[in-house]
Each structure stands twice: as structure tokens, then as C-alpha cells.
Length: 274
Image (tube, rainbow, N blue to C red; front, side):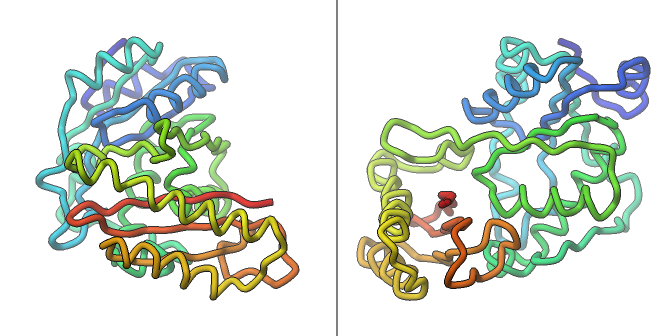
């Protein structure tokens, strides 16, 4: 596997490749990331992964400074997963100008965006820049960051990008906790408590399956259960999978999304319902 730090080197390395598959990451890789790399490898053609902790998507007081940087260990994991190129630019390579044009997507202020102002503008901006640098035919993102996946698909359509975005299923621990780089912030006691978020989403899923369409009541009950266990809930929300807006009463393609704080760690999760 080649490790490349500049756009010039990257384009030279990919000059003859027209069908590469791309997996953007912020590093501190876990099995969820590696599953995306394997999915990209199954497509055929060279696999490119990027590692860049993007300052634009971190708000004031968030964990940009303490976000784990583990490039050497990440490179070993990528090489073992048959990644061909690791693109690891620095901030100056990604943002050579002091002022950066930003892409502000629709729904940027909904769900996670309501609690992380500017986050999705930062995400879409860096991904659009990475797309232009890598010029992939395919890009692979995980469903755990469901709103992000939805907005990036919309961005690809809006900008007529010749890129097919492929969704990888959420990888979970045996107790249901969605794998995340931020799980490393959890203490042993918090790690035992963390699967409660997923359990509340599953209770909503089961209620929907039984025919309950009292969306607001289901959301409030889950939020109250988490709050009673000491969580600080940002949102529990049932949305349309098609629009990511509030669903119609007769709609069956739904997604249940949640974000909540367990002490100092913000966890997100989702479950699709059909």
C-alpha cells in the first residue's frame, strides 16, 4: 500500500485508473471502517482510503483537538484490508486558502445539524474536495452516520457527480452498540450503559412493526427512558427514509434516528424500518 500526502502525488498515482473506489475517513479506524474498505475492494479496481481530521466539521468546544490521530496503526489496518492507496493530507494541503468556500446542504440544520451548527457544511465541503482530488467512480460510506450518508447522496445528485455512493451496513458490537471512533472515550461503566440507546431505538422499531404510528409518543417515551438513566438526549426522531423529513401516517419506509450524550461522549445510532 502506498501512503500519499499531496494531491500531485495522488493524481500521478491514479492517472491510469478510471474506476477506483474511495473510502473517506477521519482515522482512528475500527472494524466498521475496515468493513467499508472490504466493500470497496469487492467492487474491483484500486481502493483509495483517506485519513483527514477535518476542522471544518468540528464546532466550538467540540473534540477536534483530542480526536485520536493514529496514522501508523491505521495504515497497518488498511494494508491488511487490501487498500491500495492511503491519502493522508495535512490541513494546508486540503485548505490552501485562508477562506474556504463551503457547501451548505439542505437539511443541514435538522437532526444532528440542529445541535452541531455548521457540521454538515464542513462535511460536504471536505467530501466534495476529496472527490475532486481522488476522482473515484465509487465512494463508500457507512449507514451509522445516516444523515451524512443521505446528504452526500443528495450532493452527488445536485452536482451531477459521476460517482456512485454505496452504503455499508452499520457494524455493531455483540451487545448492539454501533462501532464508532468516539466509543474510545467511554469509561468501562459507560461502555456497559452505552447500548441503551440502541435498545430504545429497537423498542420503537418493534412498536412500528406492531402498527403503532403515534410517532411523537414513541419518540418522547424513548427520550424519557434515556433521560431517566442519566443521558442528555439531543433527539430521538422517526423520519421518512426517502426525504428524511417527518413521515406521513401511512408511510412504511422509515428510519429511527437518535443522538444522546452519555456524560461527555455523544453517541448516535439509527435503525431502518420497512
